[in-house]
Amino acid sequence: MKNPVRIAVTGAAGQIGYALLFRLAAGDFLGPDQPVRLQLLEVTPALKALQGVVMELADCAFTTLADVSTSDQAESAFKDADFAFLVGAKPRGPGMERSDLLLGNAEIFRVQGRALDEHAARGVRVIVVGNPANTNALITSRNAPGINPRQITAMTRLDHNRAVALLAARANAGAADVRRVCIWGNHSTTQYPDLHHATVSGRPALQQVDAAWYKDEYIPRVAKRGAEVIAARGASSAASAANAALEHMRDWVNGTRSGDWTSMGIPSDGSYGIPEGLVYSFPVTCHGGNYTPVAGLDVNAFSRERMDATRRELEEERDAVKQMFAG
Ligand code: NAX
Image (cartoon, rainbow, N blue to C red; front, side, top):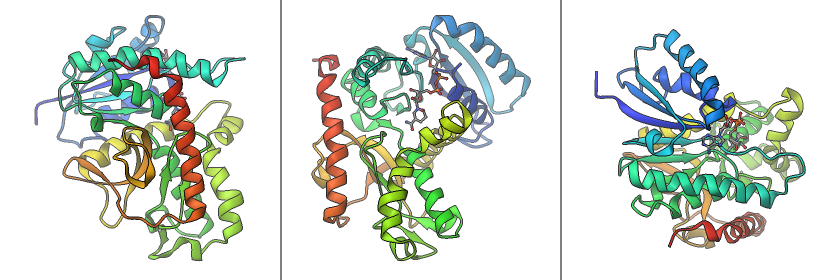
């Protein structure tokens, strides 16, 4: 057995936390030979509920779970962390404007960015799940000057997976037959699921579905799938979100499959006209523990319009939380 790696998870007593922790502990992330230490962060009132989750983790007798610690202090949860899943965030309450949500969560990620900067391993890889995920990732990064901004990413993998699944169903194919779907932009309803480069069973996806369905049904349905789940389940996506977070991190570490890519919210390198540093979802390939945005894709007028709309929303979010950036 190897030395344990340290995985910090925030919002660990929440519903995504409940779906995520058992998979991390079972070795679904780093494999059956890699023990993990889970370092769980919650707000003080949720620590009791978290103890119940810790008991259940113990009751699984996972051979890959070396240790579990809990805390309401970010410094303690992020100590020497190799990976951090930033899931915890304030939900949007009744009567709350999007701007209130932005600022309320901005404070959480400002504090956590500082704590990561001071206490996490220098090579820590971070995924921000808590909404608004892209902008929270930007705030985290802007408060962690000692960590390479490329190591702080936002989750759009759930949107990506939804896009793959809905395309596969329409084309009477399986998810494994679908390649090169991508999500551009924000994890919000302005996101742009792009099928112009996608294939199903090796043939262009847009030759297998009609253009009106793509534009009028598919794009809005992927973007609003979260609301569809809430309407049916009475609660927001949890197991699928946990799965997506795990796959985002696993592909980052182990690589994307040959001939395919995935979608990750990453600081823009300036390509495709997206301002440098904005945390925007791009198609990426992962190899050797690193990710690389896919370069040189053709962007037609249809795509350009949508990529710019979601870019504008992210710029507005960034401008609304600027006071949270250090320095
Ligand atoms: P829950 O409300 O079930 O759990 C959130 C947990 O975070 C709570 O237990 C809460 O006590 C904790 N928390 C709040 N502030 C904290 C802080 N400062 N430090 C540590 N813990 C804190 O929400 P859940 O359904 O688990 O969703 C978590 C977040 O993921 C939400 O912001 C949600 O909007 C977001 N999502 C993001 C998705 C994405 O694709 N990026 C999809 C799924 C999900 O909606």
